[in-house]
Image 1 (cartoon, rainbow, N blue to C red):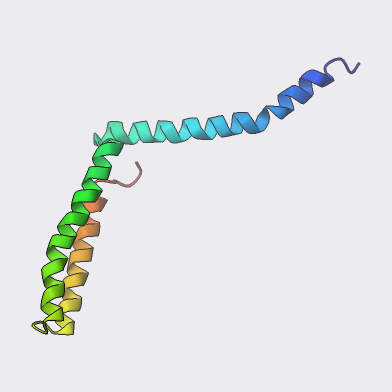
Image 2: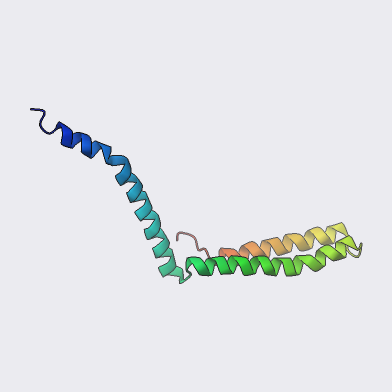
Length: 100
């Protein structure tokens, strides 16, 4: 009557491991689908982010110097920083499409 009990216990013990493996497989599948849709690999994404940061620093550096040297008003400085940040997020958003 209870001959199947050890097998049932073994099966129940494997449930957390199977759930974790399923989650990992789904994450990997989603990453592969995104790469197939966009053509952007994980390494390329890191490169895009790195160059975006460099570009922002190249633009922000002189603006910061102008503000520090009192050559620019605080309103103009705030406008330029807002524009730069908005443009950077818009640029990055193009590489990570919705629904992907």
